[in-house]
Image (cartoon, rainbow, N blue to C red; front, top):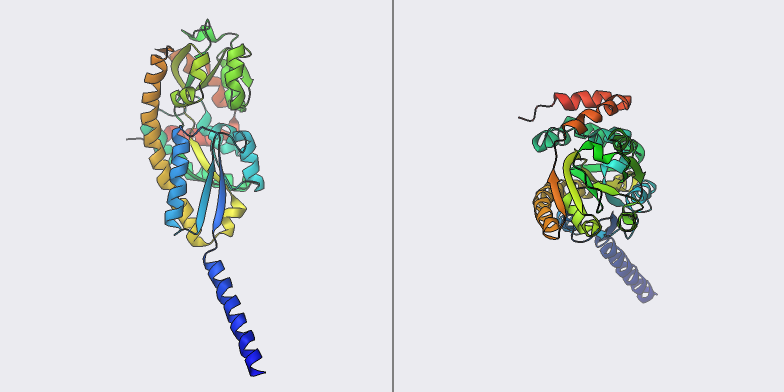
Length: 327
């Protein structure tokens, strides 16, 4: 009898040891959606983020990056992150503004005076306030990333040499009231559509042009079906990594800290990558035959002024941004 009891005790002990070892080796796996291809700096930065999370969490958290819109375009991945279908998504603040309205202030045309002013705003109290607002929508927002300054590009035969040349042009925009209204004020015909549809729409003439930074213009291949790129710098909306709040809250404090620290370090890393990549991308598209021209954006800035009064829920943030001293 004692032998049977001893055997049972040994089996129970072995089971408990196995269970403890399993729990000790348990790993949280997070799926991260990225709509850009592997060559894009934001995707490179998201892989770097995954490596940092693994390092900072001592291997207890693993991030799997799904690039190239494998899990959907940004509008879809924002909703999926809110619902907890996926854990994380790197998105532009333009479509995010449809969900968390205060982030829309960063998507207003010509809201930033320059790079220094932009990051004084994003890394300061205003950026923290906007990120806090996101939590009410079911997501946690981490440090802001660079998404380049957006300018217009058009098909062969539709160059933009002045604001008048935008009259009647069908311009693809992200699905955002601010982006739509901006193109209307500039005289164009805003045409919201998913990013994945832009190439064929430019190629077939469904749209006359679109707007984005040099890196996305290059890595998307849009330069292959666009002959002209005019630097007007109308938008400079940041990108951001978001995470399902319930999932984040379910993690240990240590894992939360590891993810937050990794996101912050990856954001700094991404900014440097993106600034360099935009310079390199401009050179490559020009070498490929795209006509790149600079333009006096004074008339553009004047034309869009009414937009600042048309989104009254952003008025307080607008005033705070204007008061930020970047020196």
